[in-house]
Length: 286
Ligand SMILES: NC(=O)c1ccc[n+]([C@@H]2O[C@H](COP(=O)([O-])OP(=O)(O)OC[C@H]3O[C@@H](n4cnc5c(N)ncnc54)[C@H](OP(=O)(O)O)[C@@H]3O)[C@@H](O)[C@H]2O)c1
Image (cartoon, rainbow, N blue to C red; front, top):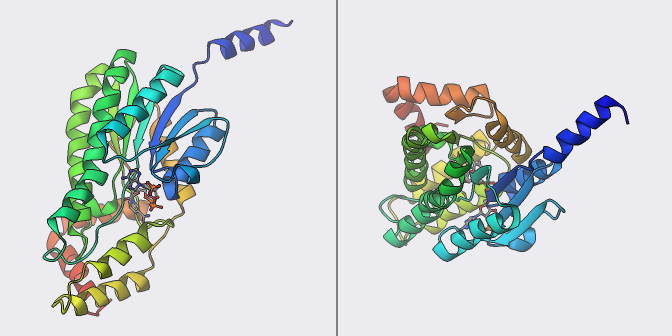
């Protein structure tokens, strides 16, 4: 055996397999990310309520997961640890949009929106952190949205969950980076998946009978259709998740397109102009 081959074999033997946990892996970005990480040689622990829709692969362990259920979250993390003994990356991806008039959405639905999009991510982060700190390495990648900054009418509670996620992730990152662990945010804009159909379906379903908001919701739905729901594919976003997981120096924010980053910047630097433009969505001017 030549010297080079010997070294490669030794390296292969000592190469630790990276382990990623992905929530919401039955569709869209989570589904594509599970496939991508598996293709790149990672061990993937993928969770969703519709476990049968998670991609099948020798490197993907598909687990039933409801992120609003503490026992389910604990079993998810515990199973990953029993199977692989380490956790390198957690991707908090599960989420949906409870769109509709802020005045008319029930508090029960608003709480559930926070349970899925925010508290599920928080609980899973708390569950993986002891392992990551002991390893002195690990990343928590939180899938937020550009609407954490670029807010729209009729998306108030969804946007609030994503804004909360951004703020939480940044504060958490300061606390855990001394242990070699990081918390990052990915902010997708409109992306092909089931997300839009669910969110826009909710916008209509959440209208009460004879709602004074009906014309504005209709104008909003029309404007959304005109703008076009998606400028990216779920595969594009899976690539961004992978970049966030593997960048030598992790960034606090990841965007798919330069225009997404710029739109977020403009919303912060020109708040009045931004509000006026977004307000046009319900005045039939888009
Ligand atoms: N698509 C967009 O335009 C867009 C833009 C910005 C941000 N995002 C965010 O990107 C993330 C991925 O969304 P997507 O576009 O891929 O949407 P999607 O196609 O609707 O997929 C959402 C995933 O979340 C899972 N999920 C929902 N509730 C869950 C729960 N209680 N427990 C566990 N899993 C749950 C679903 O699985 P089950 O139903 O099988 O549980 C599904 O796999 C979400 O956080 C979303 O808010 C999406």
